[in-house]
Length: 445
Image 1 (cartoon, rainbow, N blue to C red):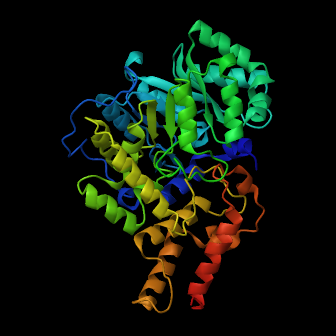
Image 2: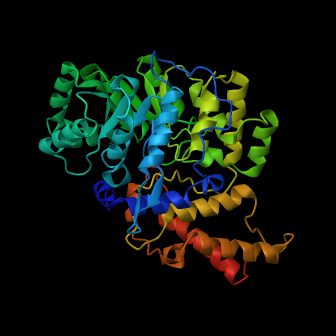
Image 3: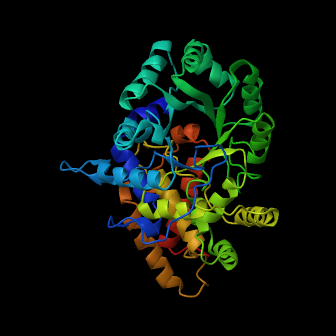
């Protein structure tokens, strides 16, 4: 299954399944009453005039079941989140024609179009994968304009570039670049850029094209772990940032929480973060980190629930940047995290849907959560082994239905080819399954 197939089949149901399994425990039943019980005040951080650094990633809108039992976007809640975000200075909204089964743009447009056009900044994408054509690209672009009832897109991205060949095959060779440059010249595209997932050489190829295309901005994966320790085919964020900074290219940040992993860190790490800032959330450290770099235009957060939005607003209203010592402290925390046997999954869902029904991101999240919470059963010798074993197995069956568990993997490796983090997914699933079996058979040492 290539990325185009993933996009085709990433319906609301599949997205909701992965989202539910990957939702932080505290947010499972967040409730919808009121707006905020916190004293939110102050000015939103801006590195570029008129653009709040906290950006809204629209891939994880809240969902609910409709009368037919299908998972659909909860438009009423989306409207409430957008209203509250705009009221507090969050005006950059990042979506795509392929997010949430193609429904993210519609839901985002419905919420934003209730407000004056000059109050919000639209970022959407040319999300063509595999075999693309000029007409297909043009139609996708025009559909975005129609959905948002606008004559311009503020920030338009070529979606998920890996290297120069990928760029040429999907965009340059089709002739669509000339069309997009013309739209930029006419003002229908205000800023043209790309999002990047790839190795250093691929990024260098794209930077070599800057003189030709004059990239207005670039979206990269950056957080205090990826700064020096990226996964898979991703490139060190310190290198990406430095190359963009020296060219004075504004930067949009994706995965500031590394798929939520930096809001739910191992207990030993959490204790050290809380010792320094007991009143702040664990996630706030990651957002303060990316917000402390002046070239950052926007740091995207998929704020599914009001509590996520409120917490991030507390960070970015009257923002307190990290000093050099605090940045070094976080890099030390990143080094310590490498000692934990976690699966480096960011819950991007590119691996989904699995043709055999396996809930890949859900399995990885359950496994990782138990390691970070210290509920991972290590051996028969640990205190309370019998109770911990029973609790772990019951919780696994409750979180992941039997038919979606790791033992159903046949190692077809379709998911592995689509993983931006380059995780050897079947190998990790087998490792987790062997662990589960050792608990069931009580053969764990």
